[in-house]
Image (cartoon, rainbow, N blue to C red):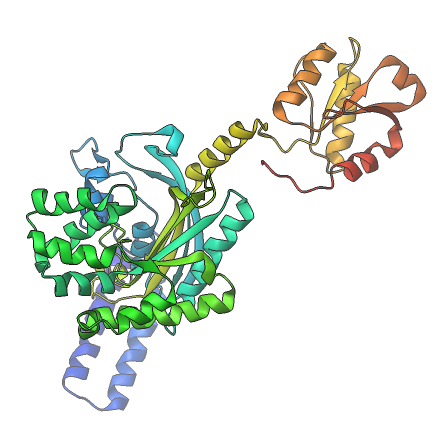
Length: 469
């Protein structure tokens, strides 16, 4: 340890000598000579495995000031020493922190993990205090709207693949909102809190939103009415082009930039073939403070009860946007890394699937098991174990009940409850004949299959892809 400390001191002194020569504008040859000495000393020093590359900030420091009015939903904790900590609110802020601390400027990633909200749970609507999110993010400096369009394409692809019903993706831009607030006369200090009020328009009426802005947040009634003229509009690229000609909005630099990017975005979305799923909605605000540009939110649409009725939104299942300033908040030098991403609410999706299956009286398959190895008589545990091992070795997803002598009826009922499609039944007669009785749980049809052909027959019958719905 003493030798290492002495060597570290030599490295420090040599480093100071190099810096001094550079300040004195010494000759290049002299500086190169001293730099070579410094590198040689560092090579002798070697890596210090016990020394950390960076000092982690506490989570509370990480989360504070990123979520606006949603900050009240963060779980604040204290450790044994009284230090303030928090549970993770989402996956976006930790991702930005990771980029800054590791000096990453270009990455594409997905992440599935738990997050926590100090909220009132509503199980039927998929709202929990502890739940999983699946995030996809693109970080890096790219030409405008190309990564943004890809994120929206991915969002639509996921929702189509899940087959959970018709959906619509609302799109807006924070710069358009800020420009709109400015021309309507909202004080700068109230931008974010008014933004939060506007974001409630998908749940409550305009009158309720206006009352909140005027009564609770002190906005002048005429300013609120001016905002209402804008935020109740929605449409496609034609609305973007209309607002580009708006005599007030078109004079605001921020709004003009946002509208220009949205026009370009719609052109890319048309090429992707998903423009019909996208709605430019001026009421979409996304309450989180870290968004800086395009924002979006996917909602499921309820099929109209009668012809001519408007489809009803049944809740947000995915959301995201551009957050170009977030990484810079963690970088010591404030270096920014442009980012855009999306988040899927996993439990929200599950809740919707369960409700749909309940309404149609379909059963949820809760396992990927393809076949249950069962026995028709007692004292056949050894034979069941041998057969299930054969199936496992052949790549078949098989299981058996953990009882020595289960009743055949109980085994069949287990398959029906769990959604296991096939039962391989072993009996004394089957063992004598060298066959396995293969039973279809759905049709209750049974057929004797030669044991050597069982694997092939199970694979043939279960070749359809697994689906929970």
